Image (cartoon, rainbow, N blue to C red):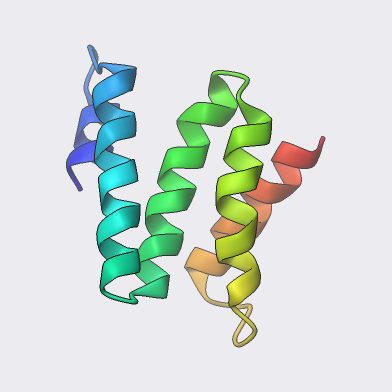
Length: 89
């Protein structure tokens, strides 16, 4: 949540935003909370994409997205899939 709030601010520090999302991914992994891990990875991949760091964004998001095999209609999965499509092109 902190990372999202920082992104919404007019003077967000990209490094601080990145640290928040990396910490969120790590925490989700420790708790085996795959959906939260996906959300954090998607949130991290967005600013990386806008910074032209597409390979890093894809390499972070794709393996987590690939873990999900059920219910592709979940909004979080649709969001991650759409971002991955953008990262390909």
